[in-house]
Every structure is written in structure tokens, then in C-alpha cells.
Image (cartoon, rainbow, N blue to C red; front, side, top):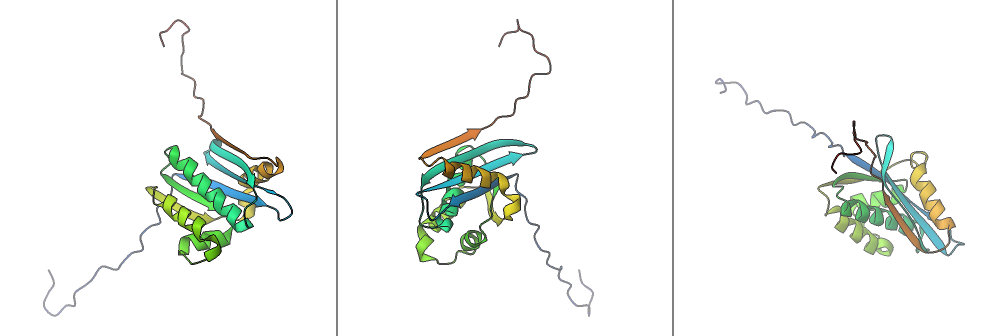
Length: 174
């Protein structure tokens, strides 16, 4: 209750803390104008282990920007299908991250941006962020390796950590 003559005190608004994401998925695309193929790769590490990774080679997209977008779309699909719902996707393509996050109009890549928006809506907590190329080397390696195979393929590996039972007996029922 305020005293007579004292101004009403309003609480100072505080910035909402940025919610961290449980998982971070690194994504990259590899594209060369003189080749018929492109590669995309993603890796989702947890602690010191890789729990999901993907590598793909496909016909070359229209541009490097399109290749990066296809990589993010594919990583989002694979992560969501496996139940990863609290995740940040990082790419070393600053232009794509800016376009996707600011929802700017860019007609030549509008279809891919719409698909990224659609997939973002399927997650409970999702973000896209830029990461320097030097911090994205594992996804870059998968993307370049995919492109180098020069034939269509897609590979996803869901690596479940092996945790042996503390004590196991051979004659024990399963």
C-alpha cells in the first residue's frame, strides 16, 4: 500500500533470460559450382559423444545458400522424428540464419524458408544460430565427405551410448 504523497513504484522490467537448449545440432552444406553434386551433414553431440549424425549427397542445389537450407531442413526432420524437441540448430551460413530468423523476403529461396518455418513450428523449443566455420568443422567434414561420393545417398546414424549393467550374470533371465 502506498503512503499519501509518495509516487507509485513500478517494478523495473527485467530482460527475460534466454532459455538454453538441451541439444545443439551443427549443420553444414557443401556446394561447388563446377560439380553436379552437393553434400550436407549434421551432427548432434551430447557431452563427448555423438548421439545423432547424418550425411547426404544429392544433385547440386541452385546455390550454396540453397544447399545450407536443405541441410537445416533435413537435420530438423531427422531430429524431430527422433524426439529431440529442445534443440538449437547452428550453421556457419550467416546469411541463411539471418533470413530464417528475421523472416525477410528473399524470393529465390522462399520455398526453403517456408519449410524451415514449418519445421520450426513442430518443436517445443527451437532456435537457429550462427556459428563460426572453425566451430562447425565436424558438420563441414560430413558435408564435404558426402559431396565427394558423387552419387545420391543418405545416411543417418542414431548412436545410443552403451552403458553396461553394473553387474551381469549369464544365467539370469532376460
